[in-house]
Amino acid sequence: MRCIIGNKMEMPLFIYGKMYDQVTIDAWQEVWNKICRMAYENTDICESIITRPGVMHVNGRVIPDKRESAHSQEYNRKEPVNSYFLTLDNIWKQYSTLYKTQALYIVPDFKELIVPHALYDCFGVQSWFRHCFPNCKVYYWDE
Image (cartoon, rainbow, N blue to C red; front, side):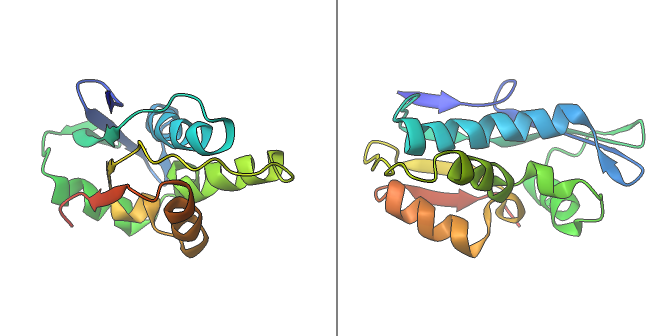
């Protein structure tokens, strides 16, 4: 079963001043929560999670550039003060604290993840991810 997160596979990007909008944060946290539920609760198992950039909104202005490189540039800037809330590292640390004494599940059925590099990349996350999802290939948006 494929699993597509986001409206029509598109992930929003709302930036207001130096902050990401809650819509953007919620969309990415939904993706990361799904991954963590597979590893920590052995639920919501799917074969792949594919995200794609949606329309960017910067300071109330719509920027219709849906190229992956444009979105990646915005995520990689990491200027917004709340950018950490968009990352897998943020959600993973919450789950690892909550399930501290529980063994992790190995989920061989999860095979593909497509996300922006800036939101996935963290040394601890990569080790944990490879352990829980040994058959998963991670692809990054065009950066």
